[in-house]
Image (cartoon, rainbow, N blue to C red):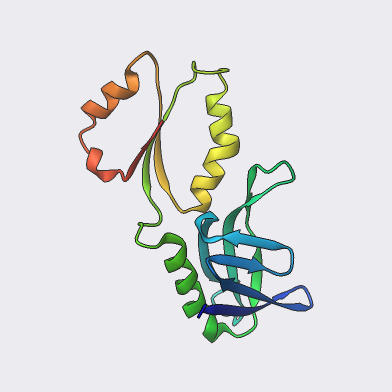
Length: 165
């Protein structure tokens, strides 16, 4: 039997359901997000004295040309007491046993390809890393084998979970 987890939310004056079933998060009627495309789900309050709780979802969804794009909706939660277990369930399914909020060592080669690596990183990659809660150190390579040299010379390489090149 498939488990269904639902959270009632408000979007404007309308009440909708965020439903998680069969490894897919359904955001209303039109958007289905596979669990592998969920970057983060968090709860926020608008201010310390506020009782309004919002669920913020950061995910990758297909655009019209089938490329993935960052999608970050925020919804007001109807019943705040049900929100924390729902968020924890979605995060556990999305990340399974993997560690969220990874620490990354990112190498950018400004001379490779079309020479637009830094711009592509800033425009397309950085927002995804930020949405996933990753921390990263960016190293712009200066010459051939520079990344290899930096990795072998890095005194605290173990502080990173991933090396991105």
